[in-house]
Length: 157
Image 1 (cartoon, rainbow, N blue to C red):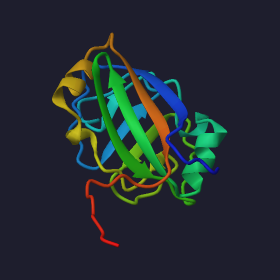
Image 2: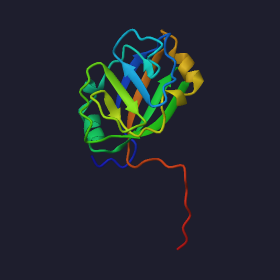
Image 3: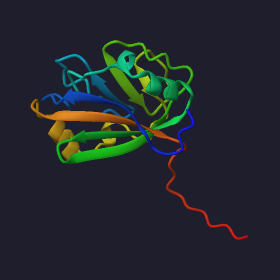
Image 4: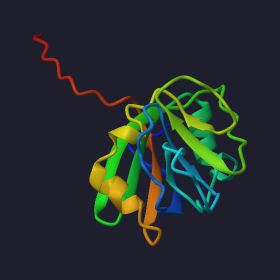
């Protein structure tokens, strides 16, 4: 592993859908399915090129090491970045879906835990873009050697 700076580990391309609402308070999900209902308020994209099972091995190794990740969701000129962490408990075997969770709930669909944001935290302009079935979205995974922090502490010698 030995990554000392952010490195792109993988990318999932997906499409928008009219039923994207981006309202879930705990998760963000992309799916290989082509249709979703409005009840699927965590799903931000359909026809995804990858699910948990399809992630490249270097990303799977990074996740299973319990390391931190940075995620960037991009659609058109809109983007949003947030963090989460992997876990040795994640088996990354689901063949249809990939879920990023604020909680520590583990399933075959889970790719990251303790994420800083969920679907409802996404900028509404980004969600609006992802409602367009013609929109292309990307979910980019980057290594994060340590969790980001908003605090800065001065120390004196």
